[in-house]
Image (cartoon, rainbow, N blue to C red):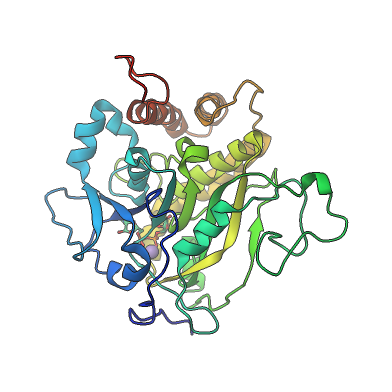
Length: 363
Ligand SMILES: O=c1ccn([C@@H]2O[C@H](COP(=O)(O)OP(=O)(O)O[C@H]3O[C@@H](CO)[C@H](O)[C@H]3O)[C@@H](O)[C@H]2O)c(=O)[nH]1
Ligand SMILES: [Mn+2]
């Protein structure tokens, strides 16, 4: 049975790569005691805490962490009417943290994800591995059978085209979970005791043209390359669906990465997912998504973005247009989601002006 590392095991001081270029985004409805075990790895970094649920509740953060915290009142104050695109009472609210960040990289983690141990018993610095994944190229155009050629002790194998060996920039790094696997409710219900104890020492680029189920609990990405695509949709309170926030973001992200020639990796690092959410509550949140996705997936598989979509924002707005055209027939929800996708980009661009701002000063 996999066990989490203890705080002391993770106590060795580490070099904090990208210390001033990376924010850690945590969606939460509870006190963040879990940060204590992550302290050696996370303390050098700035945290963006997105407090969901009742804004009058106080979220306790352990001493010594540098953080900014946003609750629903803050989101409404900052975004005004555009706050309607940020979910309430769902972990999807985390994407607000991506929008307000000013850093190049984001790592997002759930508050029930603990430090895992590798097979040697060593505490895993998940953040360090994500950074390695993001800073080394991806290989989406041709599969390398020795997996990530940029990892120590690996390389491109014979027959791998030299013209492709430079790889492409990595936009996202998708980590995995020991202990409680990220199963959907039906699977969770039939296998309530199943625990993931398999530590697979691999990092893979997800090939171009292949979608994947992106889980948001242990995820890092290059915000400058793909940030605007990481919208976690309309979930939770007042919405007919939940627990498809990260999936939606992952499908949009992968289609846009494929179009722009960017890479997405999955595999290491592992975290220790400490608790299973209620499968019956999850079933109620997921059930529409379970049959809707039989139409959503072909939509993304067949989505074509025009050549003039040269930025993530343009790609995303085009995707929103196609969602409205092709998925609204599945359910009126997608009409609202398409509108919310546009609102998200408008809000993103408002908070992250790239060109000269109205008063003529550079952004
Ligand atoms: O209303 C809520 C509920 C929870 N949160 C915070 O979100 C994360 C995840 O919560 P939890 O661990 O309870 O849920 P999981 O089912 O394990 O979440 C995974 O499934 C996906 C659901 O969308 C998601 O990608 C994964 O995170 C915790 O930090 C809670 O505090 C919340 O903000 N609002
Ligand atoms: Mn969880």
